[in-house]
Each structure stands twice: as structure tokens, then as C-alpha cells.
Amino acid sequence: MKKILITGCNGQLGRAIQKEYGDTVEFIRTDMVDGDGIKKLDISNIDNVMAMVRAEKPDAIINCAAMTNVDGCEKMEDAAYKANAIGPRNLAIASSEVGARLVHISTDYVFSGEASDHPRTEFDQVSPISA
Image 1 (cartoon, one colour):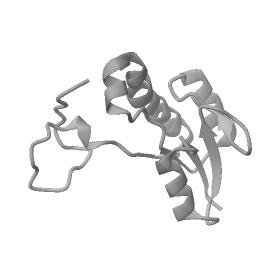
Image 2: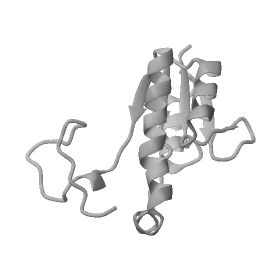
Image 3: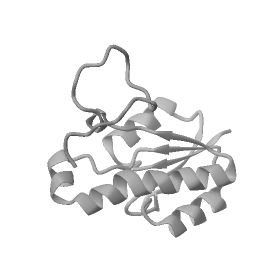
């Protein structure tokens, strides 16, 4: 059975992904607080991320952890940067080390807001209009 480390497992997206997979995979459930089968993981801390990924050796990491409150991100840019930039970077480094696939779900707020003639991909030019 595949092992998937899921960050932000208690959030709306994390819960939806776990429901979608059901019992077809073994989830290593992580969030900002531990308890009830959930391991605490601050993805902005590279040492914690590396230790967790090295210990668990997942086949994949699905990153559902993020600071999503747009107004809050504007007011707390450092916290937003840690959660939404440093954290995914750390997960990418760790997944690369153990050969795990990384799935990162992003937001369309990284784009300019102008219409696109195609579905967005990770290769599209970013041009956020706010922090």
C-alpha cells in the first residue's frame, strides 16, 4: 500500500483529499497540532520536515498546508511567506531526497487576474497583484 504524507490534514482541502482516497492508501497525517493520529509538522522548519520525511519515507507528499486567508496574508506577510513559500520549498527538498513525488496545490492568486486562453499550469508566468 502506498504511503502518502499529507500536510494540513485538518483543513478543508486535506479532509477532501483523504475522503477521496479513502482506505486505498496509508496516510501519514500532519498538521500544526498533533493528536488523534495526527503528527505535528511545521513545514516552514526544514529540520522538522527532513526528520519526518526521512523517518516515514513516504511514496508521495501532498501539501495541503497553506495560509489561505487573503486579507490575513496581506497583514501577516512573513507568516504567509513561511507557509506558502518556505514550506513548499522544504517539502520539495525532502521529497527529492527520499524519492517521493510532491503534489502542491496552489491558488490562482499568483496570477495577474487577467483571463487566460488555457487552463493554468505550473509553467505559466506568475504576476501577483498583492502580497
